[in-house]
Image (tube, rainbow, N blue to C red):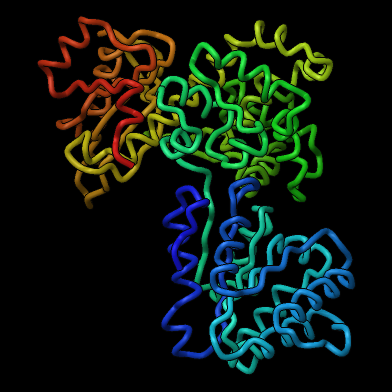
Length: 492
């Protein structure tokens, strides 16, 4: 099956689905197989799966929020339309429905997609167990050719399907998570060739495909000069779907029962309070009282916990969805004004906040992504870990924050090799003093037992570098300058 031209990118995802649908092993065994597809909303999961179903003449069933009886009736109708077989009696429960599906689809491999699967499990919690039984020994799936795909956007639910002691653990031959476009792909998708503009737009919309057309009506900023006006006429405009999207992303997660608390946690992270203690202090709770909401937000794939690479016991939290960061930092506190179309006034007074609290940290995350993807072209080898870290400076009674750390893979008892220490600046021209700070950190790490003999001091600049630093880098292989153009020009 060839990927349809209307599907941008997603080559790996398409190949994974096609391989699952045409698995030679499954054909040889003449038994049903199971696949699980998940990902946050608006990433194009349904679009992909519908295309696979259309090309393979399969069955696509989109569940809705409904009672078990109504869902069974809708599934029965979809199955009857596909098989062109009349179902004489309505299914009593999902035991009947799943068994009938497997028995009625034999012969050639048939892809069956059940989309929005969490809607079904909410009304029928036993459904995963029923599918597991029918796929197991003696089940109706043992003589069926169905390629069953369960898909959903509720990440906490979908993640639990195959984890721990879940019934379907070990039954799935496909586990596909449809991620947002990576930052270079997103720029291509938006048709943006100016890398500075690409960073600004990505800091607002991220790599979510739906925001390009459906949520902004195809409106793309023409230049960096047009960016402010674009923000006002799209994300800050109450007449566009993008305006309320960040709120809906939180409301759609069933595991989130106290939205006010979770918004406060997200606001803390967006404001730079990204440690457990910092978040607790920001929202006025004790550290042990925010463990649960942090875990829930992680399970929902709305935040990520990132360990300090030099202090394993310490972690920081990062909001995964840029639109949520933008909402918490810019929109939430000024919501009443935005609702009555005061976007120009709000943006004029919050634009600097956007640059410092949104774009700055986002540029850091892009720099880490670049380092991980292109590390073998930058350093002596491909890093095994890329993240951020803190280096203690006892002499000055301070800490040196390292925005981008690249570590080589562990090698037994050998000292861990530090491939690169990096600093990022979006709005500040980077000079020699920034590199000197990294050099101090390098020396401190060497004293602690790390191997820094090949460490490259890397600076990632959104506003460029001083002439003095450019001259130094030209004569010193241990200094690397990465500007925003290079960030976007590297091969994907």
